[in-house]
Image 1 (spheres, rainbow, N blue to C red):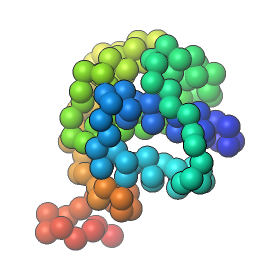
Image 2 (cartoon, rainbow, N blue to C red; image 1 turned 90 degrees about the horizontal axis):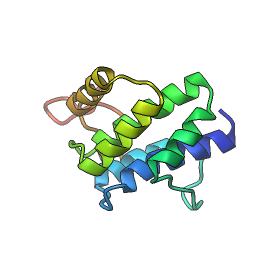
Image 3 (cartoon, helix red, strand yellow; image 1 turned 180 degrees about the vertical axis):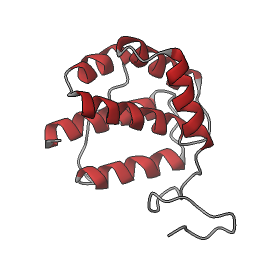
Length: 136
């Protein structure tokens, strides 16, 4: 993925996080980990794609593998705080419809994301054991 594409994908994820006008610490942590993984500086002002129609246009311009990764990150971002609010759901529904992801498949992915162990808000992207220690 080139830098321009990484910025577009980050903007999609930041957009779904901002869609409900509330950003939870878990969402901030996820955005930070994505920035780091994508090699994007913390102090760079990056775009947010809040409009689902614009998101679809961006996604349509991406390769299949990048589109799949972006969809995975969108679902993960929407579920980061443990719930999918109506604005996030509307965003996901619009994107899924345009990308021909069935409602059944979208529900399966959302359920899996919501059931996933939550990570430390600003820590590494790892699952936590029941006793609170990081898994290796």
